[in-house]
Amino acid sequence: MIGKSKVLDTNIEWYDEIDPLSFYEKHFEDTFLSKMHEVYPDFIGIPFSQKISTKNGENSKPDLAMVRNDYKEWYIIEAEMGRHSWDGHVEKQVRVFSTGYYAPKKVAKYINSKNNALDLVELEKMIDNIQPKVMVIVNEPKPQWEIEVKKYNSYLSVFQIYKGLNGFELYRISGDTPFIYRDKSHSAFVKGLSNTMEIYTPTFIGEPNGTDIIIFFRGKKTKWKILKDKAKTYIVISGRTHFLQLEKKYMLYVSNKNEYYLDIN
Image 1 (cartoon, rainbow, N blue to C red):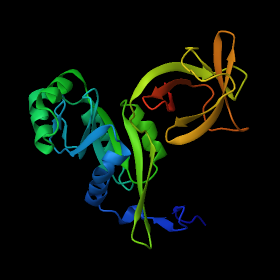
Image 2: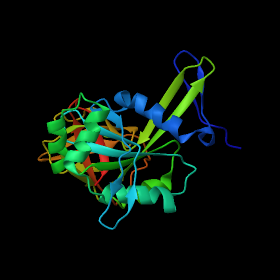
Image 3: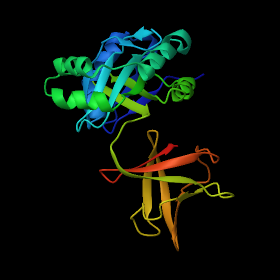
């Protein structure tokens, strides 16, 4: 028998995960929007229900959007319940939002009407030059959706809500998490070494040889040791086993806060 997910905080308070089946989609959407500035501090979130159309005549309305503080990136967000089906429902939304047309003046004016702290001129320039990324926010893990959204170069993030007897709530986010990076490097596992990855830009990692570093992979912390050998740089993962795929190519990012992030390229 599998029990439901729980979280224990440092004050010895247990928080139970709210049953995904008990959620109303609007409540989930509103809760996520209210916490978006904490989950994604480099972005400004807004409700977004403007109809998006494709050249094939398909239409759909998203739920939310978020704009990066420096107007260099923006997202269209679909808040979904895990009980919904991918085929015929979520898939259509992702397809429309990832291939739809966003009229710069119209969309900029709409976003500005939801938050006038966002500059109208900068919004219009952003929308004219940058296609939005599409992200699905879901209230429970959906491994198959994670595979499917990648076919549209889109993203999946899991936002779970836990509630304690004290009335407080905790939130857990996993999956794809937008962040601002200042540099990146291609990387891959060394053939025959299941725990060692070569960083193809040797100067990318500035820390000294032998240093331990933390690298985030899709919301999970992994620990690595830096190994510098002549003109090459490697990282060696701690532990005997890991969940990374040896045959894949990877991209290693470093954020403005000097945090490392790894993702499949």
